[in-house]
Image (cartoon, rainbow, N blue to C red; front, side, top):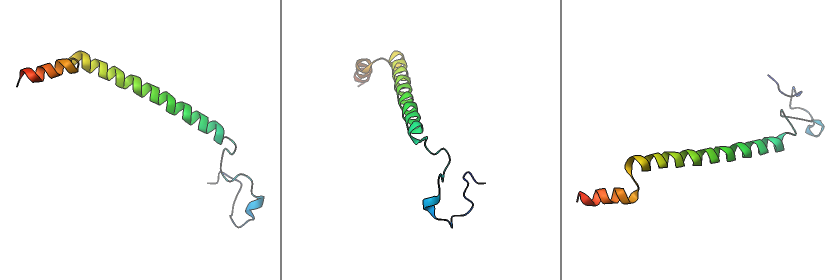
Length: 73
């Protein structure tokens, strides 16, 4: 399977044009990748904060936990 018009590498590479697909879209792909990464970071932070808030509601905050530990010693 060939994705480029090159059948053999026994040619003068100065005369070869595109050697990989989607030449010229590197900048757009980088921007898309950065935007997706930032969106994932925002989602991840919100998800972790929601999980933390749920655990605080279930188990109490650090003061409550420390008080429970101190009462048992």
